[in-house]
Length: 315
Ligand SMILES: N[C@@H](CCC(=O)N[C@@H](CS)C(=O)NCC(=O)O)C(=O)O
Image 1 (tube, helix red, strand yellow):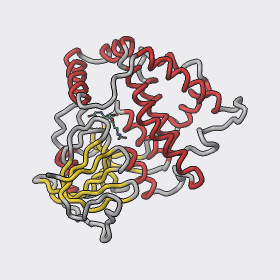
Image 2 (cartoon, rainbow, N blue to C red):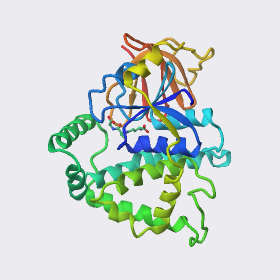
Image 3 (tube, rainbow, N blue to C red):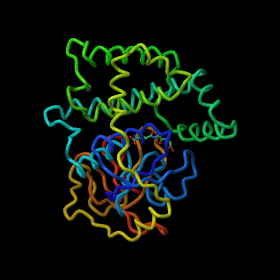
Image 4 (tube, helix red, strand yellow):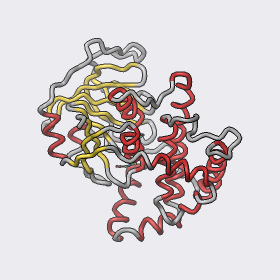
């Protein structure tokens, strides 16, 4: 069993991206099931405010955002690799397109009248209302306007057609995965968006005509979820408090204009919610690290990707 702990919940598409990735890499991990809506009383002490799902914990290191989580998993288990060196820009940029744009299209479809009806029918009314209120509050600071369901439908159709033409044996350049014979990070990012659509009976029919896409989804599904052990939120906090914090000795902050030790906040650029405050340890390449202390969880290093986050001075 590795010492990786995934804070997640079953219906979360971004968690599914990480679960199938653990399956692909044949890895083991511990899992904490966190609440789907706020409050998240055993997660916030670890992150310092970041509420999104999933979060990866390794001892007293807390990794926010799947863009960074996937890179940490790649470091823990380098083979098979998700980031082919000769396609670094293309796989990363396609993954980012999927996590932001395609996911927005998938959400708009799943919360279109047909999607919402199927979603609400699967749970008691009070729960679906609490969910809707939580997500509305979360998005109130968002920078982008909601996508109209008709736009989501037409855009999804075009993207599925293009993927279908590129994937499978019958395609002119027939291939098993988006970039060839092996999956890359781009496959996992596109997959979780379509998985979200597939699970919603109100809208899943949009996938059916695209058989090469459906077969590609089955190939990824077949990776499974790796070997998982369930632990509680309190267990995860106990692990954090009993772990030593190992700050990188030469954390670079070169391109930021900040100095190591500066008091800073880190906040997501898409929703602009829940800034996390701490002392800057490093900000280099695609990773920001801050150090913070929590009464329950002790000394922690909280890590974010650079892309998608705003590092700012505390006034
Ligand atoms: N950029 C983030 C997005 C994560 C995200 O939006 N996750 C959804 C669930 S799949 C979420 O946080 N929903 C609100 C919540 O779980 O509280 C990532 O890649 O991890």
